[in-house]
Image (cartoon, rainbow, N blue to C red):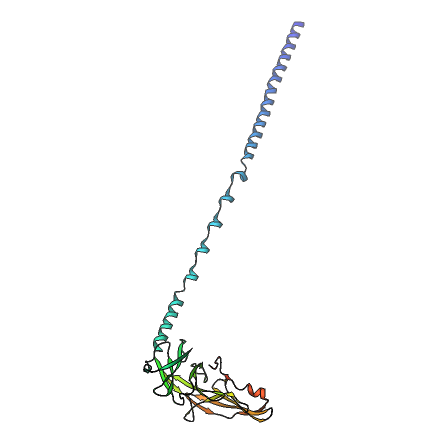
Length: 290
């Protein structure tokens, strides 16, 4: 019986040892499997999206889309403007051409010129004066920028005082300038005449069929001037001494229609000597006496 009991005990101990040995590897295997999973998870973690997804640095769409800079359609489409401007200038030039006046006389001399726009075409014309000794007369002449010319004898000029071009000013508001010319001079005044430039001609402006002449200057007892203060109106300024420092005078208005000046009713005033002296002027735009 003791032998049988010892044998049974040995069998139980052996079974217990076998059971423990088998359980420990299973536990170790479980731990290794768990460790392996952890390593796998860690490896998955290292392949993180921020490290491998380089989308932002490689998406260079914004710097390369320079379409807006290259679409220069607006600045380059100036064909219509250039063509229209060129055609308009060409047409105006052709329509404004005038015939040529007779050439200057062989003995013409003392030619003096200024620039203005007398026919309203926007091109620069040339106003000149010159003398023909064989005629004992001065001439006024316009050479048009678009071609052609007009010439007129200054009938009230002489060999004593030189005629000089002054320039152009639109007196009657018709869009073209009248030509201002000095036609002579006195002891203390310059005599100014006007010409109407229309239909390729140069016509002397008149008052009651006589050439219009306006003295500009002053003496101790008399003062005279000319002003273009209102469109269509040309004013003769004047003053006369009546006392030591007292002048009486005013203005006489003229209305220009074509090449004829018609006088109107003016107004009078009393001036001091200094105030009267201020009337001795040519006040027509930018014109200045030569």
